[in-house]
Figure 1 (tube, rainbow, N blue to C red):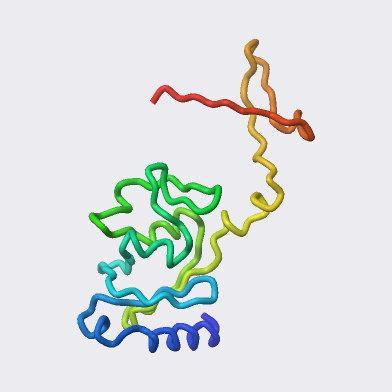
Figure 2: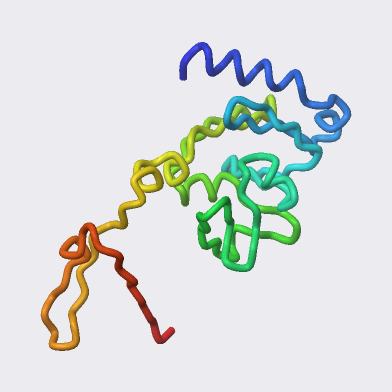
Length: 159
């Protein structure tokens, strides 16, 4: 961990309301150059951070919807195990989207890095990953064969 990161984490811990820390309910989440003070969090022995579902938009801009955690035109499917009552497993979500994080549980501060699916080249280029599917006669067709053309790809699953 870099010295700058440690200082940033410790500085943000000072911003947490002392009453919330004294009761052991609050904490601070650092993300995207801001510190979000939370009045209620939950942790377990493995260091998993659970935050209120209603706090998620303030933390990283995602909002929980029936289709998953959504931000702009991105929706990440969320398994039920990542939700517990009015709490949301933020560290499991970070793992799901490839986001790095560090935690100082004693200071009750968690720092999250950039979210690759939000900052990645895929969203900037709007180029879909190359997929291969059989056509009606069973011959393989690759999406890259239609590069430069508009394509509607319809999928279906029986489950």
